[in-house]
Image (tube, rainbow, N blue to C red; front, side, top):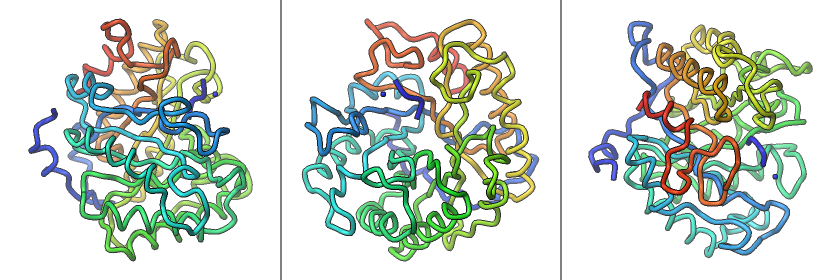
Length: 334
């Protein structure tokens, strides 16, 4: 996460499995299947647990999503907080929070894909995950609830960091296996460690993602790696401006090759830049790159939109009825 602290019903029926390696190079110029935005706000105020819904955090509704449906977006990434949906490890899910989540999902059913994303950075109550047990339990419960809704994808975990990539591989593999034991065949998005950055996929010492996450097997053959990539100087999404007009493709080229060599797919789960001319040009160039490498990049979700972003420089939520400059760029690729 970069920190500030009706599409026709036929699209639903079009949600299909995307087995790794099923596309060939002849399909490169096909655009990614899923193109959309992060509707972020349900994960706000993580320091307030459980927090007060409507005061500390809020789930997006139909009005929030309407501008993006009207643009032609087909995908929504919906970040949520683990501790709110499951306040205690290995316990039942919180019914009040589930009701809020389900109400939001009902308002987003016009989109071809909605990703439920656990926005916890590889942690639970602040503690880095040491094994797959707790996360596998959470996803067993969520997968059991949503496995008959193929338009819902499972975003396993947002931006794990300060955890060895080799350890994260064990957590991810165990969680993926647990999801499949429920009978769920939904698309699962699996991140790497080290903030799952495209620019850092080959770095991070102590077992980089390029080594630790290679050869990940899915019994349902329906997963994609989730990569994040911002356009500012340090790829954090928190600095003003963008490094250059081609910085997005430059930071993704090596991981694109890594994915293609393995017949693997990825979703660019977060990316963005401010409204400066360089950033708008960089955003445009990145979207061209994703379109031209559609054999690898099956989806993207811009960061971010939602009701409470205000003047956040990366926001594309319309303000005073006006479209944000970044949204005008995105519209070209929808």
